Length: 219
Image 1 (cartoon, rainbow, N blue to C red):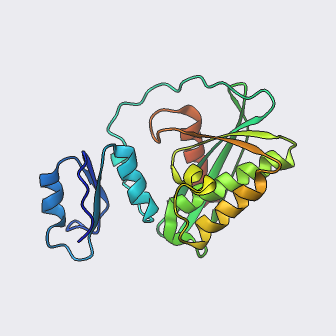
Image 2 (cartoon, rainbow, N blue to C red):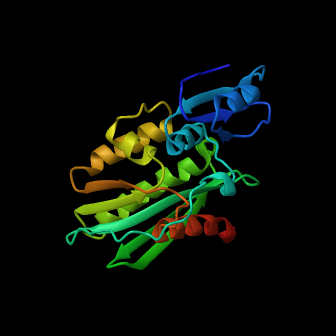
């Protein structure tokens, strides 16, 4: 059994229910983890951090459990006049073990380009996180190939920024490769990382999620 940190939200993997979950009391967490073989759990001060813990282990909550807050209208965000604004998200299809990315390019509050791709390969164990990392790399490549020197990148998984800049450990080929890719890109592209809350009513984040899921329909 591991590991205990006092917090308001408890992320649990491989407990008695055998499904990822976030619990909001230590008593509930203790019931779920005590005696469970191979269980992993940790307490966090925020639900977003607990969700990141689950995702970094290659799992996710069911769609209906990811947020218990009411959706809010997307806030108006200032755009860099000399750059490009791109939203990315990832998805995973359990039946085919494919991960996918969705990417939305935004100009003056309107979608001007979108793309997606589903992939099955060595990074499938990281599920939708692998898709979001791939999306971030595609966004940087798009920016460079279209002559932009500044990218404002919106995402909902903290690793997109933290692995890139090196504040999170890179302990597998995907995160190591992503970090190297970003470091090489820095000579030609300035990236402003902007984390948004997933499934919270942000118009273009939701759109990127929708596009990522549509990649699986392409066969």
